[in-house]
Amino acid sequence: MYIHIGVNHVVLSREIVMIFDYKGTSSPIMEEYLKKNKSKIVQLANGETKSIIITDHTIFFSPLASSTLKKRAQYLYL
Image (cartoon, rainbow, N blue to C red; front, side, top):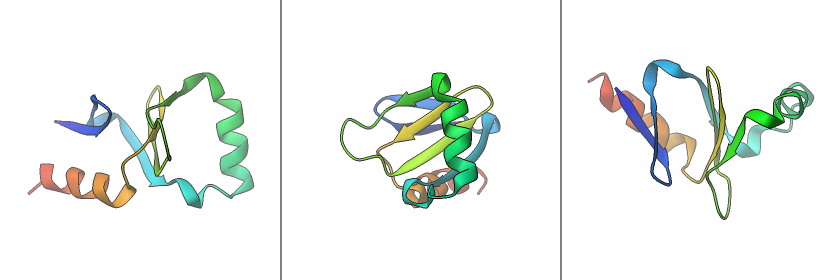
């Protein structure tokens, strides 16, 4: 199944490794991970980034809240 992650982008649900709130990225480990994988980042949010979606091959900065994405993912398995 696919999950719409914002701005006309969808990803396969099985490719999603993690979805988390952008404001929670103050961890030094996460900051280092994002710096090392800078070439894999796709900025979907033209304005404010609300969540980060990490997939097998790409890191998406999404304008959608992580709680919204969680609801969409749960809807697939009802």
